[in-house]
Image (cartoon, rainbow, N blue to C red):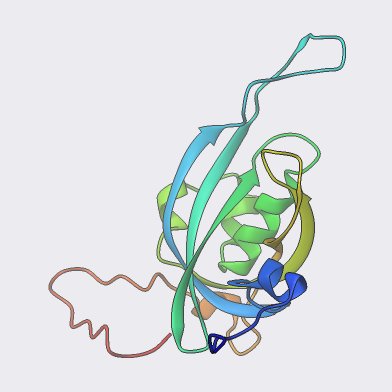
Length: 163
């Protein structure tokens, strides 16, 4: 007598745990300034490290909280990401005035544009992964109305209220 089991195709297995392409309301749970990895070019010369933000996002999909990490460059060709992140968090004026501080981004709400992309793992095998394609301003919120979700300790805060 053969076993009864749920059968998975190779394609289904590759997509297991991924969220579908889409836009998801998210919260910046943690953020820190870091440097890009030390790398060398094709001639073996070191490539300069660049400043970046390492951001932990929290969002919901299918009734389950998900975490996702993002790397936002502060220097170089990909530094446009920081402008988009600031705009999505309602802080574009501070960005334009060079007055943004990393702590102001924590606990902000924004929309993550998430895509599924084929990438390589450490063993150079093809794997499908969720990646953050862009950071967007929530459609139903004006930039001036976006405020951090955390409140001072003496204010009422109910974490049962959904985002």
